[in-house]
Each structure stands twice: as structure tokens, then as C-alpha cells.
Image 1 (cartoon, rainbow, N blue to C red):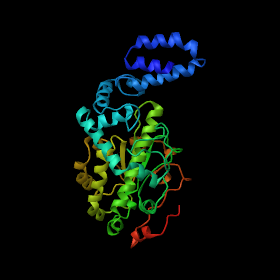
Image 2: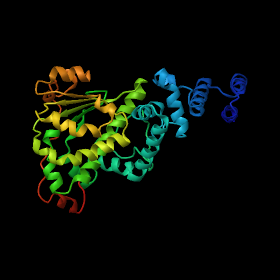
Image 3: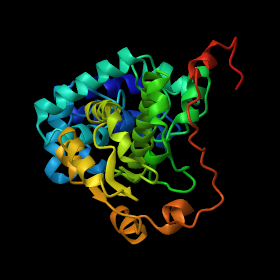
Image 4: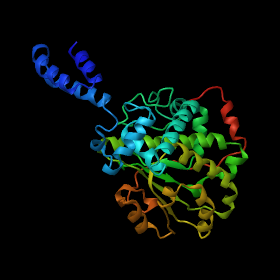
Length: 348
């Protein structure tokens, strides 16, 4: 009854009534005053105007009004779907702080997440039970405990040939993404018609990166973004024929996953990489272009400088000191790879 009375006063924006109810009624009816006041505080957070509380969750002062306006424009409240202020800040920055453009990106993203069924995808490729049908989280976004492992034949097939991964959280509290671009069997992926399956796996990878970054942001009270390291060892000029696949991947990232990466460091870049990058550059958002460094085979010092990472948090094949973590080898795609999906049932 007391909480309902306070809620009613809050809905009328009658702060004086809220205070009087708390001061006069609580001692008479509530023995655990601390729990009561904690709940009232949470009610106020849930019913606050868009501007209230934003400076306290890591939004820079010069962006508070913009994020507040974005929150009003998309009519969100609470944490989901992707509605906490720090995640809205990603959308706001991804569209150069243009509120209308950011709102359009947010609404388009929410529609895509629902229609593409992020819930089914993430359940197929890892720990189940984290998502609702609209693509929002049903678990606490401050904790990202999803772990990649295949629950379907399609997911298992994709993981065999995926060249992208994330360092385990126990190694790096801030997300570090590794793309072993030179190890992918692009020819086999195209030949065996696995492009759509691999794109699903890549969406799972992007979602994992976003949610890991989001959880880190909420814990630290400031925007945290991933460090992306692209290892081009083994990449040949013949792979340029598969540029269309990279276009699809880049389009997904820039359309539905705003401001996930803080830096993109390309290491062991071959001599033709500058030409290759110039072909891709028009597809990249300006913000992303400013984040990219191209390094050759002597990359260790530059990698540490660009990412801000310590050698202790990187595997040895990236110039770091970690030797006891196994990274799944990117397997070549065999002939008739899709026949694997015709097996009677999946064995985890």
C-alpha cells in the first residue's frame, strides 16, 4: 500500500508528496526502512524523466541532452531493448550526434533484431535463455555470461570455419576481438554455399561483442568498447575476389551494431593491403575509418600503443605472453560440407 501510494505521487510528479509519505508513513508501517528506501530509489530511476540520472551513468556532460532527446524520440524506458543510456550513447555517436538519424537507426535495429530472431540465433550458437523474442535481454545486462558453443548442426558447422573470436573474459575484462582473416577458407565458403551460415555466425560474434561491451560499460559507469585485432597472416591478393562477403559483414556491423569497437588494428598487413583497404574504405563509417591502424609484420609495439593493451592480456601469436589458451583452428571447408546438416540429430 505504501509503495503504491508513493508510486501514485511520483506519477503526478508531486515530489513533496513523495517526501512526506516517506517521512511520515514509513516508520509506522515498514520495519526494514533501508529496503523500502532502496525500492523507492529504484522506482524513481524507472520513472525519471529522460535527463534525470544520465550524468551519473557515464554520459559526458556535453552529450547528456542529446542522449535524453534520443531516449524521448524512441520512447524507451528501463534497460531493454538496448535502452540503457550508455547503449543509446552508441547510437547517438554512430550517427554523428544527429538525434533523428540516431532514432531511425535505433528503431530500424530493433525491428531487425525481432525479425531476424536474435533470440533463436544466440540460443543456437551458445548459452540459452538470455533473450526475449524481441531481441531484448531477459537476463541482467550488467552480467554477460553467455558462452559460445554449438546447440545445432548448423552452429557446429559454422564454428568449424569461423575466423573470428573474442578473448575469454578472464583474460581481458574489456572485450578483445580477434579476426584471423588470413586463415579463412573464403573459396570453400563460397564453393559450398556457406555464406549465409557464416554470416549468422558473424552476427552472433557481433552480438557477443556488443553485450560484453555493454556489461563492462554498466559495471564501470562509462562507455567501454572492444578492441578489434585483424591478423592478416596468410592473406593473399587472390582473396580480393571475395570482397562481396566483406561488404555484407561491414553493412551488418555499421547498420545494427553501433560503436562496438574503439580501435581496429590490422597486423601483418601484406603489401597490397593499402590498395585493398582503399577499396573497402568507402563502405566504412567515418568514425570507423579514424579508428583503423595498418601495421606490418613488426607490429608488437604499434599494437600495444594503438590498443592500450598489455602484452600479458594477449596470446603469443599476437606478440603477447599468453600461451596456455587454446584458440580453435580455422578448418578448411571440405567438399559437400552441407551434407553434415543432414545428420539425424545433433550431438553436443
